[in-house]
Length: 127
Image (cartoon, rainbow, N blue to C red; front, side, top):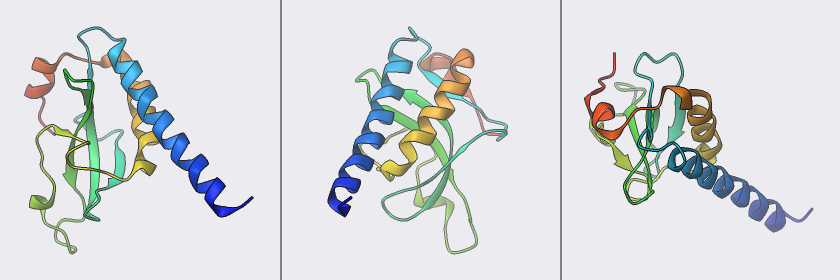
């Protein structure tokens, strides 16, 4: 298999995972936010600024964009907590590598039964 074909297929898998995540949350009525504050389960990701982050909340904005709540990991080991916003962040604005999209889908799919609305999600704090 030529490398370009493999890269295109991988990109398609990532985009399919992102769209599937959007559909899961979109079809869940007003409960469009999954927040797991106790760190029992999380998604490791890398921002496009090469900052390692831990995603502990995934939601769907009114415009049907995925937003995340995350914190910087490895603080003190070359990274600052100020390198990534701790508030809900639209991933179209603060991008993360698409390789994280399948893990974001898994996180949402596994915890969809505990999804909450936007107002409740904004009140949840990391434990």
